[in-house]
Image 1 (cartoon, rainbow, N blue to C red):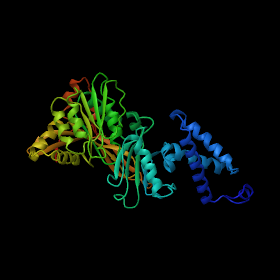
Image 2 (image 1 turned 180 degrees about the vertical axis):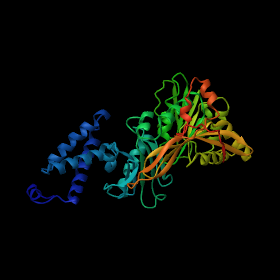
Image 3 (image 1 turned 60 degrees about the vertical axis):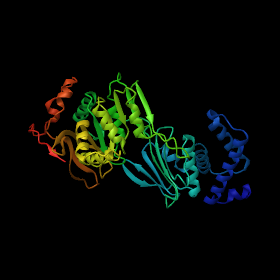
Image 4 (image 1 turned 90 degrees about the vertical axis):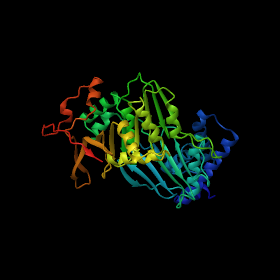
Length: 442
């Protein structure tokens, strides 16, 4: 190591900082191993060890460099290394690590490449292990993918070689510190007040609702908001891969899937939890997402007295959502004719709400569509509200309007029987006309 005088007269180079960071980190780890602190005292003890180790080097770095060095070491020991500042930034909604030297974030719906880098692939692997091990999950050469949930509720997916060809990857969907409300969505122009009133009435009237949308479109956020309309006296069972829903009702039972252990045993799937939930006397079943054979169990639950159930599905339009559900039902392994599958969907699902992320990064409810029944072998659907895009501004913003189609859904009698008398203006087009219903087939 160079002397203090030499250090004072020479500029600090990145390799020197990296070596100093490694030296201090190793010194602190040695102290922690010799004198393990209590969990609640860990941060304070590490900060003390860090200050002592730095003073022992007899170095006098500029304040800005020293403070950044301390932050980096604390992030490494107490957080998730180089990406911890990104996770702490409230403006960032998603963090994506594509190998050790490519880190992207989503901010305001747009992807940005950051200057954040890891030392090497082993550094990324260490952070992945730090994330998954406390959660009881494992990842290795034989099981190279893992889904997990951070203590704050953020959703994590990690993939390592040999599946990840260019190095280990981490994708973290951040969990918002404050839950968005329906008013927040209205202010962000994701939907209108009329649409919000209509959706509230539909939930309280025990309609079965499927929220459809692509990855990152805001399905879970909307599901969380709609679930908040469920009356507090009802028993709710939520089923998720990674628990994200934040229901404030008192009578909520939260179920979460469990991955298989290292021997390949002990897995608890969404489907098994849906089946089990039927024996728990639920008034409402809320499934975070159907992506397999559990779709059949969910439809059967909706058809056998569990009205008012909610779930989400990956698809790009209400029409695609019914096709997707057909495919998922067939994945259950039941040898059912397609017509019977469609009849199950048409009788179980009352409404599909399409949530979309537009080209400018904004998120909107682009369709609220009634599932009106069957005609022959086709499912009949009707748009009640939809987003009509009229163009794009010079700065790339999508121009359009959310508006009713002028059609009152057939299930309005159920909404009125539940005590909601929505004004005809809710469904009225700007022309003031209320046209005769025109149903469209899929």
